Image (tube, rainbow, N blue to C red; front, side, top):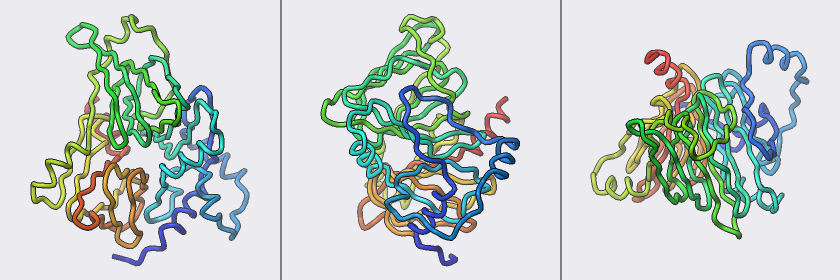
Length: 320
C-alpha cells in the first residue's frame, strides 16, 4: 500500500473545502451542487492559501463537498467530540444540524436534539431515510402501511443502532432526557428535502413502507463466536446503499470508481492501516485511490456501517 499522509492532515485538507456548520430551527434541504452553481462558485471562490487550519478549527466545520473535489485518502470526524462541543457552545439550543456529504445521489447530515425535545410526526415524500444514534437515547414512533391497514412501531434506541424510515413512513422522535442532548447521523437517498409534518390519522401514511431496525451490538454477540474474519451484509434500506461490516480480523475497503464511500464505527475500535485508530462514533470518508485495510483492534470485534450513495443511485435506476 502506498504511504498515506497522517490522518489529521488529510482531514484538515478535506475540511478546507467544506461549508461552515449550520444552526437551524427547522431543517431545510441540504445543498446539492449542480453544474451551474459549481461553475459560479468556482468563479467566486478565492485563491487557496498555504495556511492550514488547526485541529480545533477543523472540528468547527462540516464536510459538504463533491467527490471530485475531495483529496485522495481517508477523512475522519469524531462525532461524539463534535456533539460535546456543540452542546457546550449552545447548551440551550433545541435544534442544530451539520451536513457532512451532499452529492446528487444522497446526503449525510448530523442532527442534534435539545433537552427533552420532540420532533413531531413527519414523513419524507421521496427520500428513504436511515438514522444512526450517535449519542443519548431516542424514543421513536413510526406509523406506516401494512396490507392496507395502519401499523405502528415504537422503540427506544441507543448509540450504534440504526432505524430506517422509507418514504412516507411517519416517524416521531423524542429525546426523553432533561440533562443531555441527543445526536443522530442521518442518511437520505435521494437527498434530504426537509420534513412534511402530518397528523397521525393522515391516510397518506398508509403509503409508507415497513421500517427496519439494526442493532450491531446484538449482531456482534453472535458473530464473535463464528470464527469469521469479517461479515458484510447489505441491509434492506436506502436502495441497497447501506451495509453492515462485522469485523474480527481485517477487511479491505476497495476504491470505488464512482466516488467516496462513507463509513461509521458503531461499536468497538478499528485500525485503519496508515491512518490510525478509530473508535465508536467516528465518521469516515473513504476516497482513496488504493485499497485501505481495516482491522479490529486486539481481540475485540468491531461493527461498522458502509454507505455507497453512488451504488444506490445505479440500483434505483435499474429497478426503475
